[in-house]
Image (cartoon, rainbow, N blue to C red):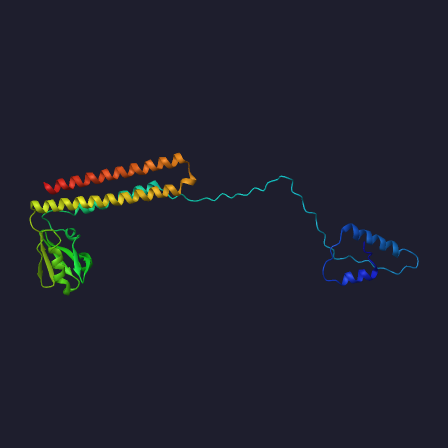
Length: 257
């Protein structure tokens, strides 16, 4: 053990950093110095407090004690039956609006929705090249944005298979709507059927999205819950496919009457 002499004490006081010494050793050395100072003829020793930092003993963790950590991460589920239902209803509503615009013997801009115009070896939708409006119940007006494309638009309407004979009138194309014939009725019925198949395709894609979302949620729910929701998706799909069939059947009946 190192003896704390007066010379050593002066050196310790001059040190700017706190000295880390065992508390017992410091107390013992201090007592020795006091005893030395009390002897006859001993040099005077002045004791001053040292800058000593005391360190507590580390608390020992009980053997076998486990540290509990909450590693649970909350992840939002992907599948939402309400949102899926709303999206399927939106498809049905769009089909209803489109079928309502299909009228035989009456001018309706929707009649030209399928017209494609060929320009420089590329096909364009008529909507991208012109504006279609109603002049009277039996006539449509097609205003072409670029007058240089009048002949191309005229040709596109003639070759669209709609039994229409447009007439170029200055910078506008007039499209007389003929009275319905057996042929025109058949074409419109076929068009309605095509629209129905397209709507079913959208429903099918929404079903696939729902099933994919359920696979992503499989780890967050039981297998029984997943199967239950899969049945819900299929039930919704069957329901709206049936609604599409009924809409198309009703429209075809209207066209052929």
